[in-house]
Amino acid sequence: MKEQGMSVIVRTVTRFVYALILIFGFYVIMHGHLTPGGGFQGGAVVASAFALLLVAFGSAGIKGRLNWHWLQTLEEIGAIAFLGLGFLGIGTAFFYNMMANSGGFLFGKSIEVLGSNPGVLNAGGTVPLMNWAVGLKVMTGIACIVIVMLVGAKKEETE
Amino acid sequence: MRKVLLFTAFLFVSAFLLMGVTEMRPFGEPAASAMDDYFIENTQTEVAVNNIVTAVVFDYRGFDTLGEATVLFAAVVCILGLFRKLKEDER
Amino acid sequence: MNIGNLPFIAAALLVVLGIYTFLFKRNLIKLVIGISLIEVGVNLLLVSVGYRMDGIAPINTMAPIGKQMVLPTPQALTLTSIVIGLATTALLLSFCVFIYRHYGTLDVRKIKELRG
Image (cartoon, rainbow over the protein chains, first blue to last red):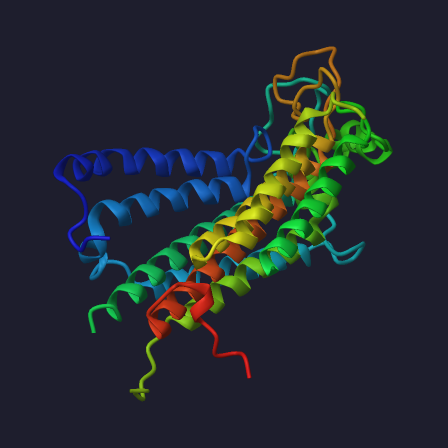
């Protein structure tokens, strides 16, 4: 992989397309309980946007600007949040969904129209929150792997 | 000689796999679907989501997702630990 | 001898091709590709087991009325399997980088320090 990245056309298109892929990835994560998708799929889409950035600009364009220690801290926060959401309903069982159908403010509505309906965003209980935790974990984990393998494999080659 | 033995073993394994697959149930008639029929009917009243696959992954079978998140976390930590630079030089 | 279940035969063919690549090639990267092919074949078999004839996706948002839904449980298991395959492949490839750095070659027959 070259140090300078790819040609001018690729760099210009990447600057424009990167934001669109990011928006699409966050849309897939957020609407995971209504349409096909969810935490894992949306996290993979956002990580592929990051890999596009890394390929188009090379390791010289990324070096001073992105610290992978921050990304690892975010991944640990995602893992602890997922485990903590499992402990919320420990009165009945582990991973019990006690926020669904409860009438509360955060994701507590019930579905009135059974069968085929346009979809209610505010419903679901702990399922949308778990989508966000797993999506954060997957996207920062894959971004971390890609950065460390690129920087670590290149530096020893030139010694 | 070793190559001929290896090739014969590979032919046996592949014949076993292909013949086993053609003797399965016909495509389009699943065998036991009592649990999945319960999921399809009762997801909208119990879990209140529309996507049945997400409800199965995160609510009915959340423990498997916990194991998978642990595997992903362990893989990331192992790769980050392999590529670090030691402070005391090994050269 | 049922020739109607063609998706199962395709998945088994993928696994057979993966086993062939894993046994008969000498480059380390090609071994990793063979392992990845076996995982792909297993995922395809797992998804195509839970199909009902003329079924729709198991999602209730704007679903067409009057049709059956396919089984959702094998799809959930395939999600887990894909993510575990990703983690395994990433770890295998970083081991390949280290072996190349230490031995200078990626030929399997020349990496023999574990013997005796």
